[in-house]
Length: 435
Ligand code: GLU
Image (cartoon, protein in one colour):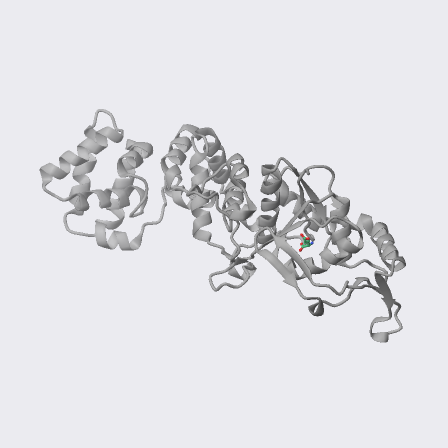
């Protein structure tokens, strides 16, 4: 049997990470089994499923790099088939008509539950059973003539030849009814697996109120698609060892439903940010530069290309998200950088600092070459000869040239800024704070 899974979202304009995680697991399962992964757009809610909402869904899938097999199926295009199937159920006596609530607004079609218990083995939750007495007949066509979700969903899964339905566990209750429908329709019941939801710290469903919740938010906020994909894949599944940063091929190879956890998965922004940093570190120098240059351009920063390259490569391993880049490198491109006031009071405005800075300036001026190795040696020699601690020397220099108390290692930082900039900045700082 060739495995065929699907992602069947109802487009609303925003794609929640819980939904996209469902898509990821369906995709991984299909690819792991050498099967197919298809898309069905459950667009029957005409008010919400606007062309823009559908486009937002397709864009999110595209951005995350899903390859989808075959043509997408739009549920609204199947309305006739849904209504014909309801007719057939009526003819066979498996459904009946009723004027629900006696409103006189017409009759709806109601599916007759078989009156037996329904059981299935969930791929994640295991054995599931619901007693006959706890299940009622349910509407499959409304009195206005439109098919209800249960009917459309089951018929479209049959139409698309779906062998494995992997969806959120908010659908468990529906599954019992759906199985009864499959049987009434004489169709083979697929395998069902229900994923626990993504929750916040309090264990409540993770929503927009907890922070970024939609794929578009993460995209706008500088996350890499591959990092988000990898993070969500691990949110409730593990490869069975301690690997975390994984290529898609590695995830496909390791994916099984048995290793999906049956308890809710807690969203952890810190972990995602860490993961994103790992992906940034994996980029080639050229890729990272391209990304960084685009960020700088957006912020209106432009400077000599070689200088800009050395700046972005200097801070590269400190960046966990491209959006951090501009605030991190601002002082490289502007002379009117802000000073960390606390640092100024504690490290700069102290007795002897002006003198120390003057001496270091003189040493810097005298160096034959001004680079990482020469500034490193010169400052170490100075610390030793002067008997001043590193703490009295390095922080004032860093503050003078960057305004900050922390940042990249000092000597590569000095080398990237270059002698002229360093001396100018030291002068300006002395003028501003130490005179
Ligand atoms: N449109 C439904 C949803 O997004 C589909 C559920 C399913 O996967 O069967 O919840």
